[in-house]
Amino acid sequence: MITSIERPVQVIAGRAPAAATDTTITPMAALKGCTAYTGSGYAVYRGCAVENQWGNVYLGFNADYQIINGTYDRIDHVYNQTATCWGWGWGCSSPTYDAVKYSEDGWGSAKARLHSWINSPLSSYDVWVQLNVGGNTAWASNS
Image (cartoon, rainbow, N blue to C red):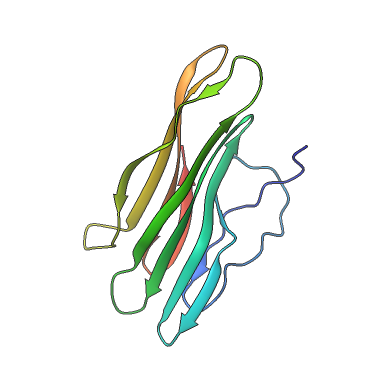
């Protein structure tokens, strides 16, 4: 039984992600579980979970990234992609990365988006979760 879903958190260089205190269930992607290594002007985050749940559909992956003051932030590695659907007549395609832009640049943030095609008893649709890293912060977004 699901009793809460963590809300998205803002990650600021030099500080670990803040723990979620609101237990309201919201359909927003979460960025959580990071191990932070910090130094002067940089922070490295490892093992971060980027995930969301839409009813009986779960999609997520892990990522490592860096926040570096004075230069472009970047995603180092994405891995452990998972899509899970449960219930009679539900199915998920194997999750795939639509695109991974490893480095922030003058055109925008670094991004890693994972998606899966969902087949339900009444329809079919696509869901996605995305890690965004840029402007000395990181956040998750979703479909």
